[in-house]
Image (cartoon, rainbow over all chains, first blue to last red; front, side, top):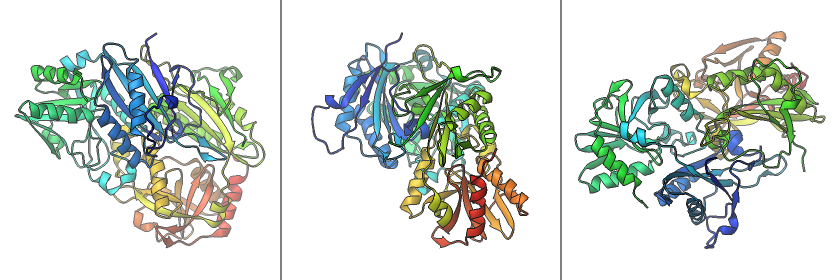
Length: 298
Length: 298
């Protein structure tokens, strides 16, 4: 049986300044029953999450993930997470991760629905498990299909209740998009807005290259701000490349000088084919990107 | 403590023709841990559900709910549910429901994510609990705010991976829309397509009246086909009214001669105010609708 680790977190107020959170973290059997059927995460996908990559026991970019968790909580009207408590939970889980690559997931649910008493406050848990082996996706690349997300690129600003900038547990559409991509012979998908702009992948950010400029779609609320994309942009700038946020028309993807999907655990996967059409791949640069992304980052 | 009942269902193949499913249904403590943290329902909102109204122990319109569960499963590429097994589970749960109104929920999740072995097949469970008291919503009506759903009315046909006709567990946006409605001083919401057509409410169908015609938005895949709406249309026809499915422009809501949100447990709630503007309410007809909806229906 593959190793796996889980912690139940008893969320404390964001203003709680204690320094020892060990009393609020309970180690549980990750395969045993732990959540009740009244969980709103399971009934309504009503909660938020983060996935953190771990390399040789070091959790990557923890602060950026915690800040995005807090951002998602605000958008979803969830109680503000106590980031010190969540960092303690991440550290506790990371201590269980062996050499090699792992993934830590943070989940904050609206809580358990009680018929008589209403909500009892949020529930939360953290899991750690080995990462899948993404060596091949990083080195040989992935085939990608573009898929219509149905929404226009102005929807996020116009209708914040669509929660487009929040990383919610309601990922059924993201998972369906991956199945549709597989049906089309692709490994992954890129979502397009209905007015023709590039958004994001179901579980990754999109980066394209034009000459020596690296571009990602402007995070105007319609997409998640990618923690790995942010980190990689810093590295690209430090290495003499220029980076930019733009409205990217779908038609410009095929003309790009390079295209990547980047995410916390798979890291940088170069796109070899977009809707069946071959794309240029810079194997050397991609290897350097992944070497950086696999180095300890905070 | 209010009564509550839960069953874990071990899903069997749709082709399984046994007649006794009791060995596949396990009564569990609804408040005790029952689901593992690897549940994809909770991690990804990846599953489907139905909510069935129960009146004096009689579950309403079970066949229509089971058929919609099967329809949702198809749209989500989930294994076809064995409807005889689900009916046995509904009957078992209904037997626990006392006099008065209750709600039975059916949940079918994609299953538990196993790092080493992949998926082990779907998990499923059924809960029963007392219904909230909706006497006031039925008699005195509700205030409703219209909210942009971001999607145009052609999205469902163009992009089936958006799962618009499936009743998935990914309801975070539906819940956020209800919170937005409350912020606007309303009790509930009606979603509008970005091209200006009426869709549905976050957890109900929309019916409007023009003279003696009762109209609901055409179920072209962009909305759920409401079981209560279907049942009520039968009753309206039997009582000499005409009913129709139409593309309903948002602007025509305010001119309607009556407006209702109908759903399995709250039943018919007349809309007294739409975006703050008073709407005509036919209290006598609404009372007759709810008397019908509270009578035993199959």
